[in-house]
Image (tube, rainbow, N blue to C red; front, top):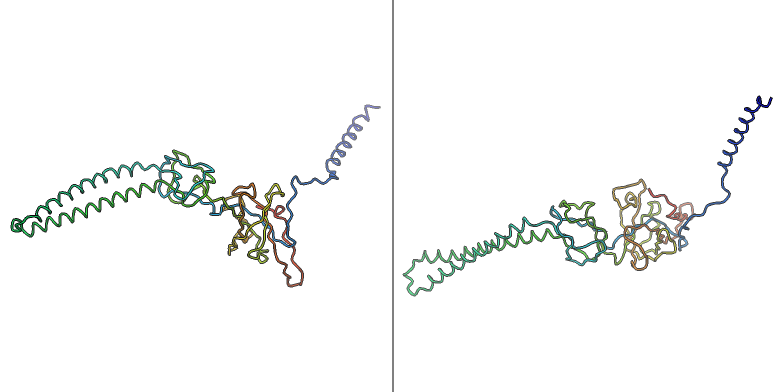
Length: 318
C-alpha cells in the first residue's frame, strides 16, 4: 500500500521544494545597497554639470619626426622634464654623415684653388711694367679669383645644407614641459610625417587644463568667467576651484572620454576649458573629473526656472 503512494508523494515534495527555491530566489532584499563612493555634490545653488578630462596647458602634443628611419638614440624617458631645444630622440643619420665628408673635403680643395688664383692675380697685378702681361690675361686671372670665391661659397652652402639636414634627424622639444608618454624604443623604425600611436606625448603640466563637455541643451546657461569646481572621481573630498580660460565656440559631437578622438556618440557638446594648479590635486593628464559650473537662473517661456543638470557621475558616458 505504501509503495503505491511513495512515488507520487516524493514527486509532490520535489515540486514544493522547487517552488520554494524559486520564491526565495526571486525575493527582493529589503536592504538597499549603498554605493562604495558617494557622488560629489555641487557647491552652487544653480549649476551645470559635465564630465571633464585633464589636459596639459600646452595641449597634449604628439611628437613625430620629419624623416623616416631607425631610432638610434633616446635622450628622455617617461616623466623627464624638457626645455625648449632639448634632444628627445635621434634617427639614424649615417647616410647624411657620409655625404658630409666629401663636401667638407671639397671646401679645402676649392680654398686651395682660390689661394692659387689670388697668388697668380697678385703677381700679375704687381708687375711694374704693365706691358709684361696682356690686359686679357690680367682680366682672366681676376675672373679666376672671382670664380674660385663663388665656388667656395657654393661648397660652403652645400656643407651647411647637409648639416641642417643632419640636424633634422635629431628631434628636439619645441615647448617647455614634461614627457607624458613614450612609446619610442631604440631600434624601432619610425615613419616620417604624421605622428603615430607609437610616438611620444609631450606637454606642460605645471598648470593643467580641464576640458569639460557640456550638453548642448545646457549650453545657453554657460556664462564666460563663471565659477567652477572639479572633483576627482573616486574621492569626492578631493576637489579644487577652477579658473576660466575660454569657451570653444563650436558645438561638436561629444567625444567618448577614452583618449581616442575618433570615438563619437550622438550627443553634441559645448567644450568649456578651465585651468588649475597641478599641486592642488593628486591627478594626472588624461584623468576624468566631475565639473560643476555655476549657472545664472533664467526663466523659460512658461515662467518657470529650468532644473539643474544631474550629477555627471550618474550620467551615462558611452
